[in-house]
Image (tube, rainbow, N blue to C red; front, side, top):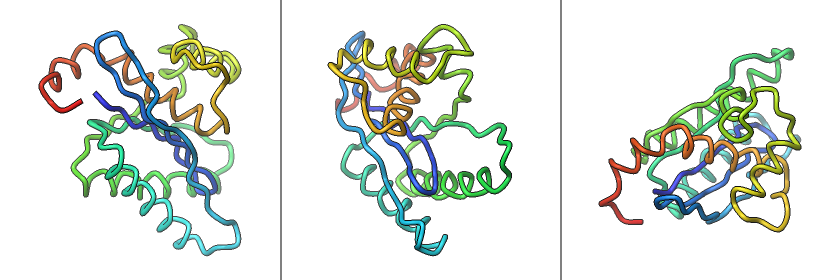
Length: 168
């Protein structure tokens, strides 16, 4: 199974693709979609939308795992992130790729076993789980890998059974 994890944002959207087969987990790719602050909001959203569509076409994930927004102190920030998430969901819908959402608490619990784990705790967990020499950079890409791994740990048995006959 291929899982695309996405950490939505207007300035930076992190992504991480992992392959899961039984107990084996392999990183296929990770990085960030970056937009320019000087660009109009609609142009930034269009860039995110087009890049996500390219990722879906290139990586062919079986499922997209995305961070669920649940609380922000800054209303302006939550609106922008929600807009970015909206175009990501639209791209997934057009490509008929199912989407699941996880809260930061669920992600932290799945990877570190503790809902109040620090960013550093999660980054170290990613490094260890994926057998990497270094913590993935930038942070948004590492967050996206964490979101993909969360899906693997919380739903592995059900999804493995459903797609074990599909192309891997």
